[in-house]
Length: 124
Image 1: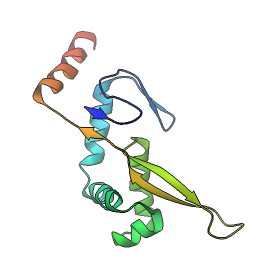
Image 2 (image 1 turned 135 degrees about the horizontal axis):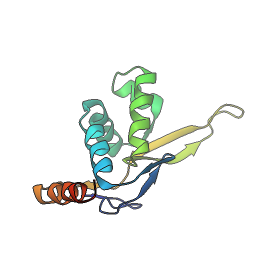
Image 3 (image 1 turned 90 degrees about the vertical axis):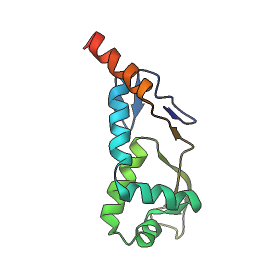
Image 4 (image 1 turned 180 degrees about the vertical axis):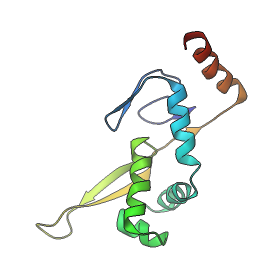
């Protein structure tokens, strides 16, 4: 079960990053896929200790900026990472956004999986 300041996975409808997720099976699969990637897990670990902007995060993890951007966007879409502040370093240039993990918990039990997929068999 995902618990954050904005949503609970036990609900049936989600809207994030312009995408509508209609059931908790889809939501669970998307989150598990995102968290199965070691780069994304490292991002969450680094940002938990010290929120930072994307360029600094890419440098810290020794990743090319485009790859870091791709993975960070995946985490943002699932509300696992959020923008916490924005700074304008030089007037006229784009602002610098700082990121940190959301306050989430993921508790997955055989019972919860059974409940989620039992619903699928009854309705799908």
